[in-house]
Image (cartoon, rainbow, N blue to C red; front, side, top):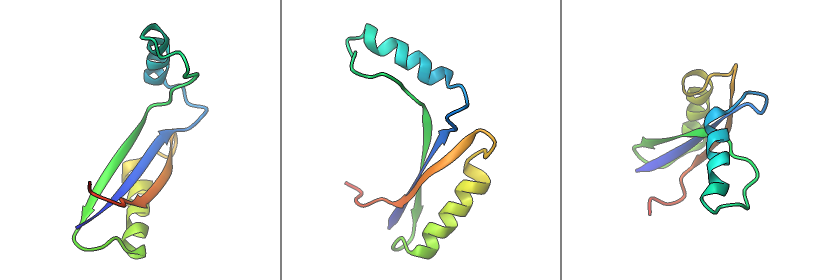
Length: 85
């Protein structure tokens, strides 16, 4: 069984209140090295069999039409999961 990973992020010009909240909390918790946080979504799709170019193309189409809102989000990555470990 193979898996496809799809990462979706808010467009840079879209405000990210959850990311801002986390960015504000990190220094208070002793994690002062981080300067910005953006929150996104990750989908892991399982397929019977290997992840082929056709499967990746279908996953990209699903990401563009169903899994993301193109007005406020970008699909930043569609790739095969290298290992299930």
